[in-house]
Image 1 (cartoon, rainbow, N blue to C red):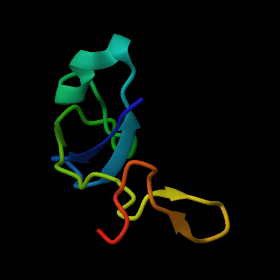
Image 2 (image 1 turned 180 degrees about the horizontal axis):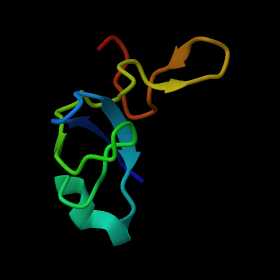
Image 3 (image 1 turned 180 degrees about the vertical axis):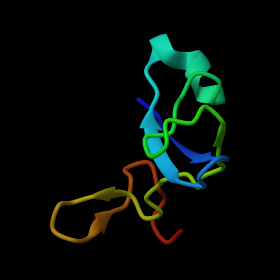
Length: 73
């Protein structure tokens, strides 16, 4: 499930919310409430994506290149 970041326009508290498919309209911030002040004026923030630039973690602190990568690239 995607996690979105929000900011309350009333108290300026920033929080994250996991959005389930049944709450898809909540991703707009219309039905969410601030967990700090219970305000309804929340705004969805732009957040950076998450990715692994050098393949998949080996669990040993290193990364293995994907099998589809060419050698020397």
